[in-house]
Amino acid sequence: MRKRRVLALGMVAGHLAFAANAAEDIGDAEAGKAVFTQCNGCHQVGAGAQNEIGPHLNGVFGRNAAGLDGFEYSKSLVRAGNSGLEWHADTLSAYIENPRAFASGTRMSFPGIKDAEDRVNVIAYLRIFSDNPRDIPEADPTAKGTDHSVDPEILAIQGDPEYGAYLSSECTTCHQIEGGDEGIPSIIYWPEEVFVVAMHAYKEKKKNGAIRSCR
Amino acid sequence: MTLNRRTFLGTTGAVVAGLSAPMVLAQGKPRVVVVGGGAGGATAARYIAKDSKGEIDVTLIEPTRTYYTCFFSNLYLGGFQELSDIAHSYGKLAADYGINVVHDWAVSVDRDTKTVALAGGGSVPYDKLILSPGIDFVDGAVEGWDVSAQNKMPHAYKAGSQTELLKAQIMAMPEGGTFAMVAPPNPYRCPPGPYERVSMVAHVLKANNPTAKIIVADPKPKFSKMSLFQEGWANHYEGMVDWVGEDFGGGNVSVNPDAMTVAIDGEETKVDVCNVIPAMKAGRIAEMAGVTDGNWAPVNAADMSSKANPDIYVLGDASQQGDMPKSGFSANSQAKVCANAVRGALTGSKVFPAKFSNTCWSLIDADDGVKVGATYEATQEKIAKVDGFISQTGEDANLRKATYEESLGWYAGITSDMFG
Image (cartoon, one colour):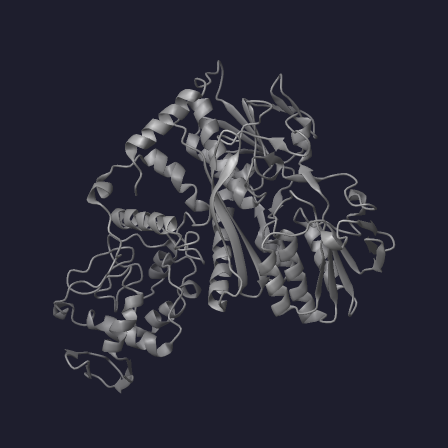
């Protein structure tokens, strides 16, 4: 599917109206939905979307960077937001092309989408959930989380924070305590359950020899 | 997480019970003195100060005000890092963690009065002493070379001015000149280090002096990540690197720093740069403290305490602990186990089971990174390897690039873990 150039009040994907102010490149939202599978491990979008490892992306257009209450952003994005960075097609595109080049201390563990058409398409997809939030499609939120299942009894275990602090010191040799994502993923401020499931999956995969280190 | 609370309490209960009762001091706070501000010492000092929340006085004795990490110093030689990128100060450890940072040499240890004497005069008392002095060189290890020759034939195995000197010498090589390296015998700091260095020198020469040659005299029959390096040298620097292993007389070496010659198995060659990396031993203070046996300081795996003295701990390269390689990552990992045990001994805080890990990344050429690593546990006799991983030959370029980028992330992580 090809990218289309539309003018104000163009129709995209045949079912949603956009109130764009000026002529701009609008991608193919349907193709963008497929691109979004790179994002939905951490980001939800759609009806009932919630913050997970990353903030939910409903209404992201026009939002200030680090502008959602209740999500712990990296200092770097908070600084960017304070200096007036707003998310629009151009800023989103620059960010997702190379997150670390755009905001060096971001804790978004994502190498970026190098293909310009993929970026335009995924931004078109996100836009569906922004221009008319009340029209957010009645689908389940997108985040797929993980396909790894953990016994609820394990999730119910109350850990010892002191022991956890000791164990986590093994992580901070590589993972920055400030949460910067620089070749090694950021692992701070994850929802507790998501973290437990990820650690469990890591342990199981390691046992099976499927992964060689913390990657 | 399958952390089982009962198992964990059971284990740690046993560990705590195995230690003597917390030390109660008649006056003042318990005192920890750390000698050496590298990956072992800086980490130990920071963790003890941070986690004891002011209950322990921590003094860090380190002669240099600016610390240049040995890890990534090869990347400086290769032009991938500036010297300033690998320079760190102790400002945060002093200001944010309340560590008393003393820039001086520790010259001796009195185990009876439990004091460390400083070169500048005076002494520092300790309840627990942590030695993390890194390495020194074995005298007479390479015929014709001693430390007085290091300005002609640098070792560059302690980062800083030596690394700068070696880089300047490489850049000044005449067209088609020869770079020689005398590689060290096992065990030594950073097993892949000499070979990453060869790669980085080759990278610089390929760009600036493509007809130059590199010759490596090695007393070992094989080395860390050998197949990965040899594949990389063949792919990126074809015909440039001549590695002479033990089988071809690589261990039978003498050098003449004044004449700038290297003789390998009787065959003398005139060279333009000669990087001599001699056999190593524990940093001298370990010997002065009487905790060495031969070249290294044997330690108990559970807490890194010296086998010779229960109030002295030895971390990193200087220690003889078992299966872990001598690396900054290993020292950092050992430091956290040690810090936890030392705090427990001095303040009665919980002591958890020892757990160690290490990864050594090496850069072969731009975006061509490889790694080797393992996890370890403490057994009665040593730190024992549990399982490991290593990059494979023939990996695709994206994976190699990701591995290199991972090393950049690790560098940012470990240096903030060391220096705050």
